[in-house]
Length: 209
Image (tube, rainbow, N blue to C red; front, top):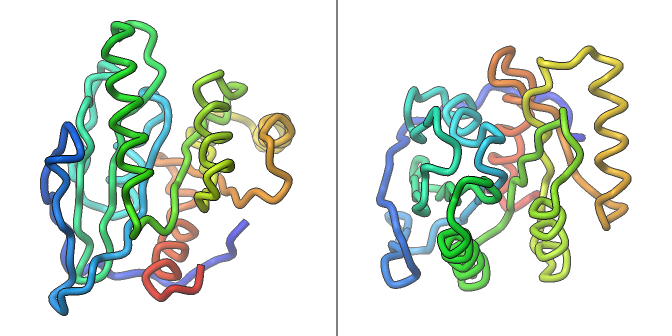
């Protein structure tokens, strides 16, 4: 787990565009012309991904939240200052989504992850209250196989007692096929994990993570 960190001040945070396929991906460059380093957030459609992104950057509705899991079908691109691109990938695994649409989402996610030469880190969100689904495990195994640097974020930790949180994290980590996993707890209600995620983002920008 990553230790404490000083407060990070984001001077400029804005939505760039949404893309349905690789032909629509924007070219995200710094003012120097150099491509921005990219960080992607991914997880099941009801894991709390949009709420977490909003909490990390303290911008209400930066990432659109929905009462209906699975509604977000596009890849959303954000720019943070002149240094970082944040990629909000479509939530996967929602049971009420038609199978053909699930396949399309999966292809969109894979296309982005495989084509991006600037992707430095994937934040893979898992609901700490539940064991990983087949979709969770398949994504994690894919990322591991392709040597994509991944940090697990356990979401909704405020919904468990401290001892339950620890035990559930141990159980989940035990089924992931990687013994060297970076991970942390997160709660959008209490902001636990906010400093840690910001510290990681700062290190990614500086090339030290």
